[in-house]
Image 1 (cartoon, rainbow, N blue to C red):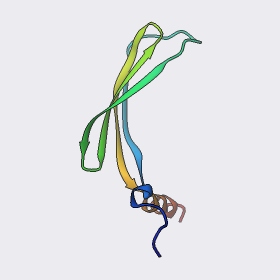
Image 2 (cartoon, helix red, strand yellow):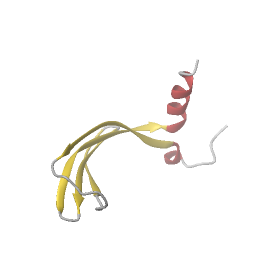
Image 3 (cartoon, rainbow, N blue to C red):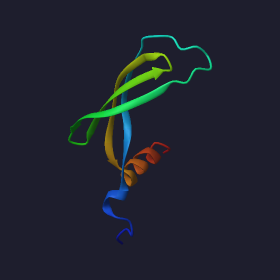
Amino acid sequence: MSSPLPHWWRWGSVGTKLELEHTAPTPVGMTVTCESELTAVEGRKLVFKVSLYDEKGPVGGGVHERFVVNDAKFAAKAESKKG
């Protein structure tokens, strides 16, 4: 049976790594904004540069990695852990 959804709809991504550095304090109540930029595509691996700012300037940053996965296969693998 074929899916009524386009082939790309069955794909998603999962986070595999998150490295953040906190470089400055932010007072309680001040808004922190996170920006990310896709910096590399290595097969199914996506690498993002992450920058964190509060209202006065930079407060941190780092790297976030994700992998593109087939949603159904990933869900089945996760469910199989239940036994």
